[in-house]
Each structure stands twice: as C-alpha cells, then as structure tokens.
Image 1 (spheres, helix red, strand yellow):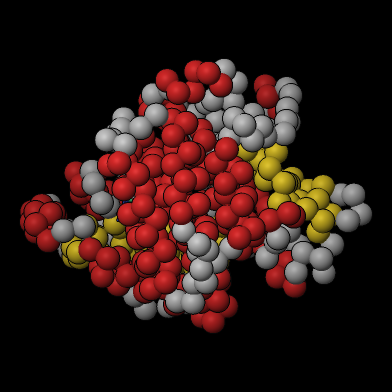
Image 2: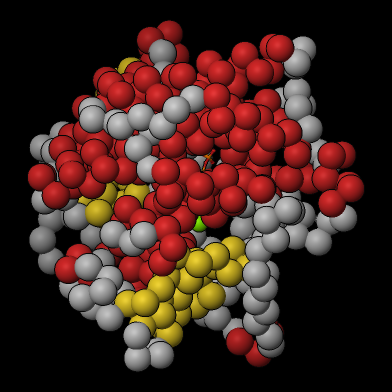
Length: 396
Ligand code: NAD
Ligand code: MG
C-alpha cells in the first residue's frame, strides 16, 4: 500500500465530521487527518486534534485561534491553527491533501468546497447547499479541474452506486428512465395538519431514523431537505427535475433507486448510518469496513412506500419550482430557508411559517442568471435580507 491518504475534514465537529473521523480511525494505514475545522464547540475540536493529530486546525476567529493554539502547544501537539474562510480554503487546497470532506452546513461551505474543487481534490460532498446555490458553476469547476466528486448524502451515494460507471454520458445514453429519491417523511409525516403550527424545534429535530445536525433535521421535517436533494441530484447526475421522483419510505432502509428503460430498478439498502456512504466515498472504487452493523431484513420485516403530500410538505413544491426555474432560484430558496430555519430554531417563527416566508421571498424577486460566484453570493445576500425584513416587519 502507498502512503496514507491525507484527508481534510471541513466541519469536523458536526455530525458528518464525527462520523467521518470514526471511519478514518478504523483505517490508519489508509487515511491520515491533514486538517480539521470547527466553528463552535471548540473544546470538542481540541479533543479531536489530540486524537487525530492533524497538521492544521481551522477556527472562525483570531482570539479563539490563539487560545486553541496555546492549548495544543501545552498538550505537546504540532498542529497549527488557522483562521476563517481563508484558513478553510488553504487546508482545502493544500498540495499535500488528497481528499476533502465538505461537511460544513449551509452556504458557509461554498467557498472552501470550491477551493478544493479548483485544486482538483477528491471531493466528498455532504454540503449539498454549496451545490444547490451554485450548481452550474460548481459542476463547470469540477469538469475543468478533473476533480472526482463523490456524493455523501445517503440518497445520492445510493444513486451513484446504482448508476453505471459511464453515467456522465447522459441518463438517456445509459438507459436510465428515472431516479427515485427516497425520503423518510420525517417526524411530522402523520401529525395532524392542524397541530403543525404548535410543533417545537425539539420535536422537529427528533428524526425517527437519523441522528443529524439541527438545520438538516428541520429541513428533513419540512422536506426542504428532499427539495434540496432533488436539485442536488439534477446537478450530480445531469437529470431534469421531471426525471427525479420523490418517494416516501418511512423505514429509511432503501436509500434511493434508479429505474432503467428495460424495467429493472436498482436500489441500495443499508442501515440508516452515514458511515456507510462516507466509507463508500472514502474508499471508492474499493470497499472498506465502516463499523455499520449488517442489515437484518428479518427485523425490518417490511418496507412501505407512499407519495408525498404537497399540502403537508409545501417546501417540496417550492424546491421543485426553484429547480425548474434554475438560475438564481435555488440559491434564493436555500438562503431564505437558512434564515427561516434559524428563526424557527430560535423560536421566532412557527413551523408552517418556514414555507410561507420562503414562498413570499421567492415571489418578490425575479429569477436572474448567475454568471459568476459574485452573482451567486449576491442572490444569496438578497434572499437573506428579504427574509430578515419579513421577520422584522412581523415583529419577530
Ligand atoms: P452539523 O450542524 O452537525 O455540523 C456542521 C459543521 O459545520 C460543524 O462542524 C460546524 O462547526 C460547522 N459550521 C457551522 N457553521 C459554520 C460556518 N459559518 N463556517 C464554518 N463552519 C461552520 O451538520 P451536519 O448534520 O453534520 O451536516 C453537515 C452537512 O452535511 C450539511 O450540509 C448537511 O445537509 C449535510 N448532510 C448531513 C447528513 C447527516 O446525516 N448529518 C446527511 C446528509 C447530508
Ligand atoms: Mg440525504
């Protein structure tokens, strides 16, 4: 075996970051941690540095960086602490890095992820918001640098595994009719509609099958997550929105399916544990142990499917409309959603208002072309401002 691959984990203190480090630690002969980043919970970042001895750690501010640097030195570590977005881009693009796990949540992950793409790294993409915001530019950068882009989102990783190796030739050319994107339906799949105005952030974050960060947990409850994933699938697999169908599958055992013209439907199954897609992408095209228990079909016993109800999940409709409109629409949808979800988590708005605010904001602005990254960030900023204005207009 060659030297261990050097891995940068952006968003190391989060749910995906920790699962990634768990898989990496099982294979010290294959992988070494090059850099770790964290935005909050910096005691945890310190502990991760002690455990994984990275060359670099990245934190948001200089004051925090000095404290962490002192603590690391006192613990006898050589880890150098870098600061802010510049530090994130540096550890994403460093010539010694082989692969970058992009696991920062939200728009904040876009620049560092793109820095890794432009440097031609192998990209393990969890940060779907980055691709949703800037799909066309992102994919163009991937093609230009020759970066290998591997999906971590369990659904997209499943689709990737069910696609033929040459799917980049186009779905029609490889005989794919549709992509079937599965969704659990989240914690409110069966909650009476009249009760949704009273659900709490804690209830929204209590996902029945997956343990995840708070933002994606709320997105899963509203199914905005599935909407973002629909857009993500269109970019990753060069599909039209109409070729991606959402299927509610409450057990989260089938992680998605690919429907071929000959009537074959291929699915990937597994326990709902993100270490499976992470290990799959880390080792691709090989396979390694992820620590995930084998699937026990007898204890699962049955698999159910149902069509999503758009009245219950208006965010899914909004995302599909944004996918169809393209251009600035997905970036605006994503930004309005980030602000609305954070207001819901802070108890400033009620759960059903997440969708209604996003819809109002999207209706205020015409869809424009996004020719460069500045245009992406200005669409993002515009939607954030409009959403904040809605909140202050309504006294929230
Ligand atoms: P999380 O909230 O648990 O972790 C987010 C990470 O990003 C943390 O390390 C945090 O410190 C960092 N971060 C937050 N804001 C930041 C900022 N402004 N600048 C720099 N770093 C920042 O989230 P998560 O559940 O691990 O999700 C991470 C990404 O992976 C999201 O894009 C999510 O959609 C995607 N994803 C997660 C799961 C899952 O099971 N958790 C599944 C599929 C996709
Ligand atoms: Mg997913």
